[in-house]
Length: 466
View 1 (tube, rainbow, N blue to C red):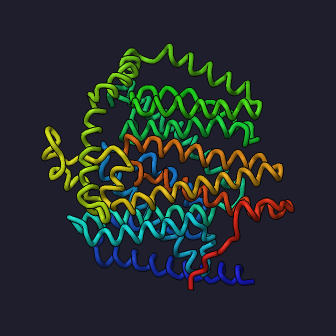
View 2 (cartoon, rainbow, N blue to C red):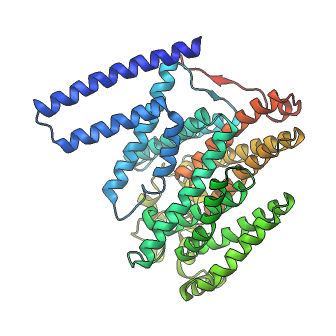
């Protein structure tokens, strides 16, 4: 009864808002002579909010799609629009949740750690060199945290979780097609596509590769299996043509882990098919790929090229931590204060740290780094508990989903050694997916009569706004 009333109330409220908004836009167009482009933008915004309010799960998928185009460096205005649309999607979900007076978020250790991280970051704002930049960065972290909560709230069944992972893998494949077309057309020197950054695209490719391999054993729909398998060679070729050395190293590690898992699940044919695809693509990759791959070990040993620059940036970040170990230089302030701590050729530049852990420690101090790592560790432990409980109950699908959460998060965190990933939506979507998995497993395994989940997953506490 409460749920029905909540939905009716939200429908009436949002319906009334829609009517008033339509009349207001008509008045603005006719009597205030507002430009039609502005009216169209406002209408698109209202539609976005409405979709997220009435179909928040669709809103999550739209957010997933946006991460593959919002970073396009060739379209900065479009990137800004995508960020606004992301905010509108979150606004629609929050409006629906408040109207129903129920967030459907179970408060666990990871959620509490995220809140603690936001509180600590807000405290660090008071000590920041540039308070305006610090506030902007904390606003970004706030949006990312709400995104994670939105995922937790609406991804509440095994099917929805599987579809979320499938969407990630297929969007990576589509992004790969776009990047390859742009590369072979001469529009870009390396594969970057609409993502606009080859290292970030390489990260997405590694996530897509691992996801596409593992989802073959989770999905039963033949067309989905075909699409996932077809995405593998595209994603592999795209990853190679990004010429991202970090991406190549992470790929070897991730595919080794995936191969071991597939062997355990008797996925020998899938593994052989993937290995054959890698061999074939190794033949068609250009000489620039092999030249780039050959520089990995020399650049690390001699600290040359971009790796040498990263080492110098890390050293500058360490000096920031030594100078301000508790509160740091302030969220988002690393680039702004780099000149004070850099030496040699980096003096006077404004670069990011190219290391998520260095930048978090430098900007929010050692307590901030401890909280950030605790969020990730708590998520990993929760997924491990789900896997253990699922195997005990004979639910291999949930165990594999838990493994995917762990592996995909591991891929992002490993990439964070040479890239700043703490502010990427993909990381926080995975944080939300991990927490959602805990709630899903609790319901599914409890219905199956399992006794292990009560110990492995803990007791749920649901958040209900006043």
